[in-house]
Image (cartoon, rainbow, N blue to C red; front, top):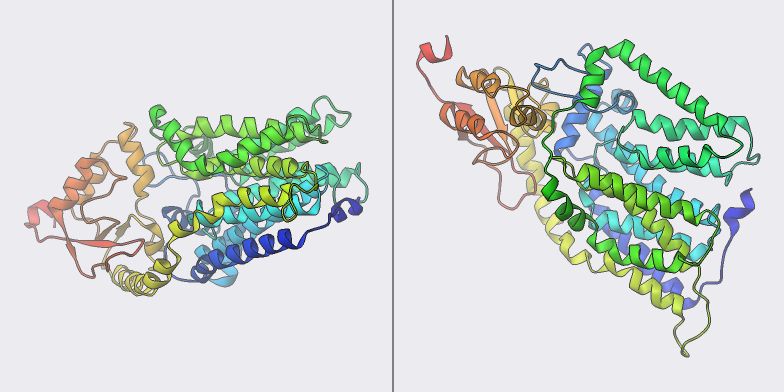
Length: 492
């Protein structure tokens, strides 16, 4: 089966230079995320959240807390053990998670290339372009997810390589039970890393049911159910409650705007891919179209959730780029002039969603403010580390690096309160008693993740003190310290 990956085509000089230019551009776009990968600077709220749970997975704390606690865990457990194990070796779960995430992102790009070259039967140029555009789109439109401590990309990588193995592209014996078992293990096992990555598992199920190998599906489902029962036995009913009944506001009206905002630069690729493959009859291309439609439906269902980010459409992007590769593969290399070929013309046009987005990234601004952000972050971490008592961090990575325990999951606790699952007084009473030595918020005028009553309690019983973040940094942190109150108020 290895000869399938050797499918190639003749590149013109112009095509070669366009692909070289695009590759160099992507390398430049990746410089800053790679520089920040080892830096003690937070990228996103998720980083500290995942790091604390990775620490809990290998420690004494419960991985899935009780409903009345001020933090939650709505992710399956596998990524926490994987990242926690690597973090124990290198000494930092956030850095470990970033390494896993960045490696997974590159692995997904390679898997896209292999799938296009193998079962989809595309030539070298369309396959390479699709992989480059995937990396380019991430480094511009989904930039915060490049090398961020989050299990999303790991789940996608496992699923796509499971599809590669299931297709027999890189296996010498396509029907080997070992390879089929490994493929299904990767595809369905990924759900124990991120449970809402359903598009490929559902597509795999639909593909296997009518086939002669359908019995393998029942084996995979049986093993998955066994793993689910094992999780229930280890973590108890809190596991199912946190995963299946997680408190979250749902705003149906914001779903169209979110999808439009997340995907509009890729509409060109979507229209081109569908139009170019409409009458292509490429092997397995109908599966890619089904993958696109299924991932769009799932993304639409998830987009209304409060706090759901553009990672909800990653499956959509992957399926669109697979269609794009199939479509570009149909272009015939006849000349329309003495200097340009239709494929070169389309390569340039299809690269525009990446090239035109480069100015909005603000590369020079990132490099200019990054030193100031490192200094500011170090000052905040030092202040939190020396706090005489518990600390409530909105940016959880700051508390993690400061060595403070996980006290309050600001987003999920806020969602519990906003959905009525938890009373606001559970947190406001602690604030009134000034239980926290420091409260760190991302904005000086309160947290968008908390109810207004909680913010007002913070303003009443706490006040902002130095160190203050410098202007223009991406992740400012404000420290609120208790104001002096009569002893009868604090209970002292």
